[in-house]
Image (cartoon, rainbow, N blue to C red; front, side, top):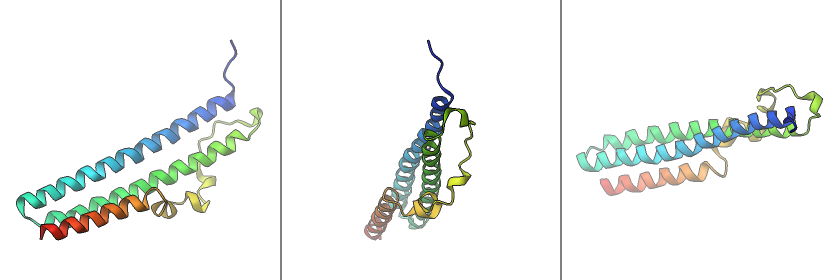
Length: 136
């Protein structure tokens, strides 16, 4: 029975971090819809329009958090690519993603307007605007 190589083990560590970031993205999207729907339900039930205004705060907070986790996921993917190309003797088990921070694709502001986040949150914001017009 052969031992797992250091490179393989390091890639597993990085993949676990990528999976964690992906899971966070999924959970944040679910919580954003749940919280915003609850605030709109309260606004409709109590006819208190303040809940509608308050619902926009979680929208932006979740959008910013999603952007952060997506940027971290992309940095770990860049680290994964780097480690994948290393020789076995160069493996140091570093999980430092700082060298990949400068890549425009991995920057937080770039991820806010990515193909996965921007359409989701803009659509959610438009739905919120439409719903708020119906509640008036």
